Length: 358
Image 1 (cartoon, rainbow, N blue to C red):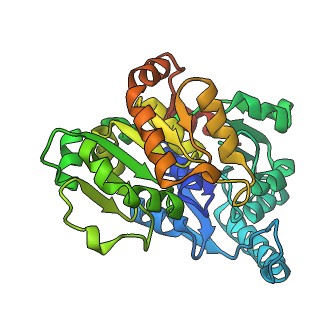
Image 2 (cartoon, rainbow, N blue to C red):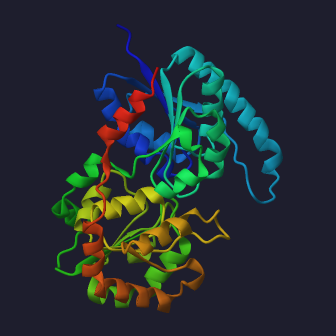
Image 3 (cartoon, rainbow, N blue to C red):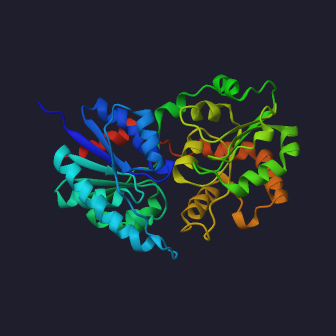
């Protein structure tokens, strides 16, 4: 019997790739062959090729639809059309039984091509409201999975299911001892992890480094500062360990961590929730985004899982005040997270995807 193939797509940020990374081995365990369609220069190219070198990776042209003026707004539609042609040719050759899209602009031509070719298309939306790419893709989807119940108000209800969060199984298997070795910490201070997403976050990086002396009186600091944002002068600091970006090491670092400072991307905050890590969320401002992280952060705050510091209010002083409050209210936050609904496993999500394959 010929092995059935499922195409996965999604990219642009690590958040548009991490769920795909999690379900690839589970779909393979269910008997499917996996192929991936992503962009040529996006982070998905690096992450998928590195994590699953055996998975065929197809790079297509992709454009970005911007809410602001840019000369690229005139050329990118042609890139999207080129991506649509390329995706159609790939689908015709691969003949998949389903396409699973995690979003990002590279996924739009893939989803459109899938519908044109009669292939079932499944979309996953992890934010409270769909991003622009998923908004464009929704009419072409056979089914939409959401993380937040509130998202069902923004998608076709008759074709949608709220699954809740999905957590990578390896995230739960991390080792604090391995994390300590990675950071070379040799004291008993609490550990504060600061991360700004795969691209880093300059305002957060600055707030940490301006307060580094005061912070390291209380904490060991793990700082995921983004590519190109390492401060070489701080290398070798006994209580401060900086990384541009981590992949497989993240589970170990999180198990070592007591408190987290982060942006408010859905995938990350649900991982912190699953591991019961009290969090200070500094969502991307509306000036830099469509406001999805603000919605995510405020929902977590309302449920008692997190504290929130708006980026517009972020200063060296307000950052330290927020950290002190987070530290003092650690127990209350952990208690609230203990009562939260447990996340789905990658295997459970893979079975839901497989159920929609033809």
